[in-house]
Amino acid sequence: MSSVSYSIDVSESYAFSEARTENNPGVTLSWKDLCYSITDPKTNKSRNIVENVSGYVMPGEVMAIMGPSGAGKSSFLDLLAGRKDPKFVSGETYLNGQPGQIKYVSTYVMQDDALMGVLTIRENIRFAADLCFPSHFTQSDRESYVQNIIEDFGLERVADSKIGTVFVRGVSGGEKRRCAIASQVITLPSIIFLDEPTTGLDSAAAYNVMNAIKNMAQKHKLTVIASIHQPSTETYSLFDKLLILGSGKPLYFGERETALTYLDELGYACPAYANPADHFLNLVNSDFMKDRSEAEDYIQNFTQLYKDSAYKAETDSQITNLLESTKNEEDKISAKNKSGYPRNFFSQTYIIMKRSTLNASRNILVFWIRVAMYVTLALLMGSTWWKVGLDQKNIQDRFSAHFFSVAFLVFMSVAGIPGFLEERLVFQRERANRFYSVGPYVLANTIVAIPFVLIIAISFSIVAYPMIGLHPGFGHAVLFVLLLFLALFVAESMVVFVSSIIPIFVAALTIVAFANGFFMVVQGFFVRRDSIPKIWKWAHYIDYQKYAFEGIIQNDFIGLTFRCAESTNGTCNCIYGNPTSPTCTFTGKDVLDSYGYTEIVIWKWALALVGLILFFRIGFYIVLRARRGYQ
Ligand SMILES: Nc1ncnc2c1ncn2[C@@H]1O[C@H](COP(=O)(O)OP(=O)(O)OP(=O)(O)O)[C@@H](O)[C@H]1O
Image (cartoon, rainbow, N blue to C red; front, top):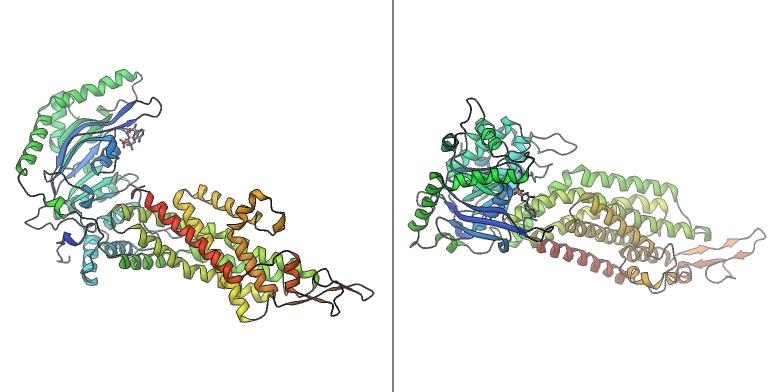
């Protein structure tokens, strides 16, 4: 094992806790009479979700919050971690016996594993390290930390295996969970909150996860609090302290080792060979009692027994001692709190960009299947509209080709939603744990999208443009690609904007598909522009597909000369331009004029598309900013 120590200078970073050296032995977390109440929307009355909970956990200890389903475990964990609206909270929380901002010294690990499936365990942890270690750490320092935490979590054997996606079978559920935890606690924050870290794992995997956490807590003097559903006997034996909740009330708080003695004293001795956690939880579970008032009395009885017990008195006196002993000390933890991130704006942006590029380029579903689909579509279009020609009868075919190119390309941008939602989860966790802020993330997301959207626009055009036989000349082809690129970029920006508001795949897909369908209707292709009803005119002017389509037809038609139809007796029949044209031809301008497309200026239309990109990207930023980090 590497000998690198974990001493970190907190003055430079907030994702970090203090260095746990001999002079700084971690943070004791204590809380007194914590309550959380909400206003019940049905009855409009106040309802206590957590009631008068007191306790403390020392550095190096692991505390488990246990209780039947609905007992208030997650609510209490959130409350302790400072994630509940202070309006609904009462009671006090202390860091080393003093009030302090818990978010600066803690990390909250949520239940679901927000990881990038196409990256390996090492890559996931390494990117987290890159983001939250201050810049004075060299690359090799960071690598040593990454290696250390991989070893601490027993992940060495699978460190270079991918997490796994729907296409690639990855590591096991337990390994994935350990990686998710490792990548969020790499900075060894003084306090770690874990929301049901073992849920969904078999008992062996659950034990491995908790054992890794326990070892880490002891080795680095971390204070760990975890909500746990139903631990096995082995996992239960790893806890130092227990908080048992029932209907939001404390039924026991104290050493894990004395919990069974307490039950014994009450006359509920744990049978030999029984799982102590199961025994305790079965005893305090009133869910299946038919009479609700009897169930409430049952829990109330346990609450009172605990309130009157020596264990409760001992806890209160310990908390008082803790507060007394630090009363006259300088407020060490709050003094170090200031806003800021471990890396500067540009480093954050660069690291997120690097990770997103790697993620997108390896993600078959997100990107390469889309490229393949666009190329296939280009081939289909090319063979259908093959060398569309310059005859009068082909005018409508040309319009349709342009409409379809824009419409289909932008419609398929919904394929980006699943990839974005996966990335968003990672963002949400990392932001909540103060790895980086919203600005760098939005900027990185925007920059990374550029080459990918460009590849799509080029790969489609390179096939479709010559096959259909659009306006000859390199400049025209480049303009075609540019307009398609801008339209696609607006569509991608709309996708991330909508998905950030409603991060649910089916809902985001429906809304984006609806918006795109609506924009097609008011674009001015199916219905002449001057026939669009007044009530939909506004939509026509904010319709990004209109600007792309009109720019593309201007680019294609202007400068081309078309042949009029000739009747069988040789007379010329021109429906565009001069009906009695002596050359029996008409120009592309004649066509556009006849449909009322007289005011198109390509650069202005391109600017309108850039404006819409900015609109959605700024909207995306505002939505993410408006949400609290953990929402
Ligand atoms: N914001 C809220 N509005 C209404 N009820 C709430 C709110 N938050 C929590 N509750 C209720 O409080 C109780 C405790 O919820 P909580 O999720 O904390 O329990 P839990 O012990 O973590 O449950 P589980 O083990 O099933 O996840 C539940 O009855 C829940 O419905």
